[in-house]
Length: 543
Image (cartoon, rainbow, N blue to C red; front, side):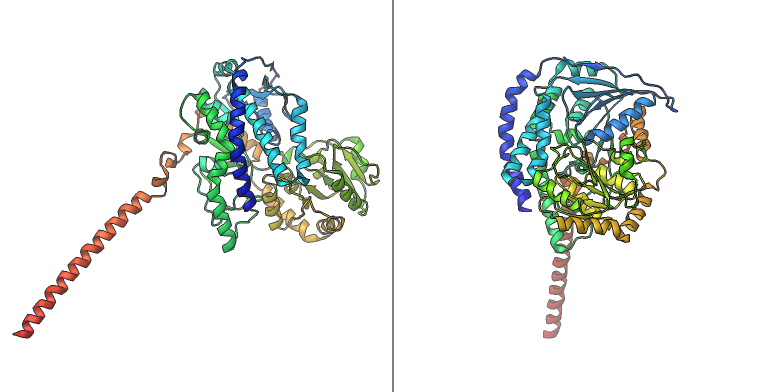
């Protein structure tokens, strides 16, 4: 709890410095649209008579996985899909069924790789060093947003394309700001926003009594102490949102020409495609315009490469080890611990690892710069999945019913891992302090204990038992918003109420005043009656 508070205070102090730095950059960011347009052919295969135009504002990292999946499927069905992305990125790129529109940015590929590659290095760094890395990340994100929003030629070009809707991730407000500028309804696709801004923007109730907050690592069944901590975190959420969007608030005023915050702009969203479901998250209230689409990649399967066939065969099976898209290697001392543990197990291990390959790699370990994670997890020979606890990997593990060993690193991963562990489908270890003995014990438990396999099979059956898969559901609601130019009838009237009205404090105040007045009048009348009766009794007694 105290660490979260220190992070908030530290980052609020650095945001002011970053805002000053980026103001000087904004003068040179307004450099006109000098990007590239890459046209990709599409084949109309939509069963719907409506074919529209969709604008996608790409967000890098793991957020791109599902955004790309929806963009590809929309384009495959015959819609004109335009994806806007920076010329330099970590994972963004062209696709077969959409047009790519890029814009220039004042940084190179080496800077991007160094920034995101530094996430693994922060595992063993001090608190202040971690905060310094976050500061650089925030500066990078804001610079990227300025490059897009202040590119007047690009924004003008987009305004002339007659789009029907905009699809983006709300983890950054860039897409929401462009949607408001162009007058487009927004479809937000995300796992969630750390400060709970998604729920606030959707006017969705989130009682801290049973809705665990980000970074709390609690389940929905909390004791008194945990409810106190959860409530305190919920009270700190507005401060965290301010920390995350301070710079964007200034950018929103400059870009839109109106006095409005980026958080207010995000309330305009027509549909929220929530990349989760209740096999991962705990039951909680949802609004009519919030749709659960967790696990999009479950049904996407491809044959395994030939060079992997010897590694997935054998009576003892194999283990898949990946730490997500942004952490593909670990410090050498931690890697040595994993290798020592893997040397002592009978299973083969397929490890996504891009760092320097150690000299003493065991014969049962294959290190690869990229692994077909979903296809490996779908193989019947897989025995365990070692993961960082990202939502994409967890859903693939649940989909294919693979017991998990979870090593959360950052973000929502500790919360995800704790929720999976509470369902009895895996174990959680601390990657910074893990030992060979803990790894061997954890692997032995998830591989040899039948309860983990039984629990994950039950959870997998629940996850896959649905009338429409998440990919089709996402496309349906995206087309719905495009056809109807929004979904205002699903937005609650809570958006038009201030906090005093939302909590009915005005009604409670009036009713309290009325109750007090009625009580005072009643007491006064009773006193008068008693006084009159007493006087009459004394008079009769004297007579």
